[in-house]
Structures are given as structure tokens and as C-alpha cells.
Image 1 (cartoon, rainbow, N blue to C red):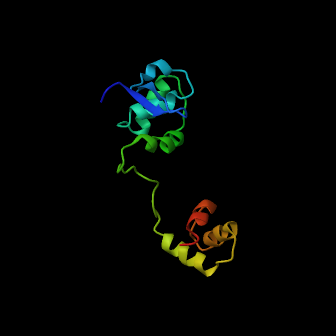
Image 2 (image 1 turned 135 degrees about the horizontal axis):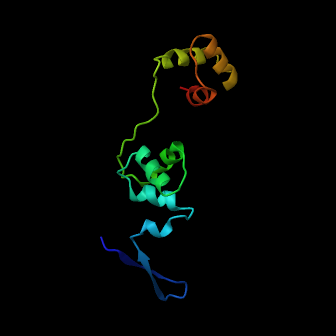
Image 3 (image 1 turned 180 degrees about the vertical axis):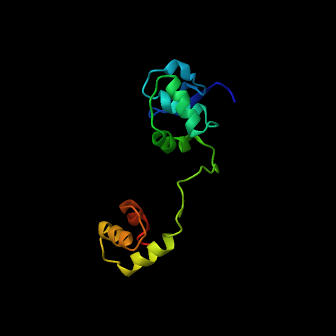
Length: 133
């Protein structure tokens, strides 16, 4: 792929216009700028979240692992499967759904409390996401 290209279009007067377009960015030129962290992530899609955090910290950019995880997928090729949060770690998701089906009119907060009383500890956010399943 070439380093530069041309953006061409016809303006409202019917005249052909063009502008040069750069396809390559040297992220070292953007150190200390607000978008540096995103550029570093985009340029290093092969690195893990932990490695990206080390790279950013080495260059004086502080970001949380959560911040990097939420933005890393933007720059990965289609079909890349990243590890997600643990699914059904304690094996009680089925039981939680059964209990929630018995109380369809309870609020999210009350459902979380009922689950806890029945030995299935789930956050209100988990209940909100899974209550209609």
C-alpha cells in the first residue's frame, strides 16, 4: 500500500477538486497529544492489553486496563475473537433465570435481592441485562 493518496470529488460548481491524503502516521510525532493513546493502540493491534498498558506507561500516558479493552476492538481485523468476561463462572445462571421468571414485575434492585436470598449473587447490571431471557 502506498503512503499517500488523493481524495477527489466534484464540488457544487461542477469543478473537480482533490486533496492529498496521508495513509501512514508516525505516532512519535503525536506523543503528549490527547489522541496518542488511540494511535498507539491502532498501530499495535498485535499486542495484548497488558502490553499496551506497558507501552503507554513507558511514554507517560496513564490509562486503565478497562479503557484500553473498550477501545482495542476498534482497530482489530474482523473476525478477531477477544476474551470476554467470565461466563457463568459459578454455574448458577440457569437458576438465576428461573428465579427471575417467577418474579416478572419486580424491579432490577428487588430481583438482585431475591437472587441473593436464594444463594445466587448477581449484580443489578447482570439482572438488567438478563432479566428478559
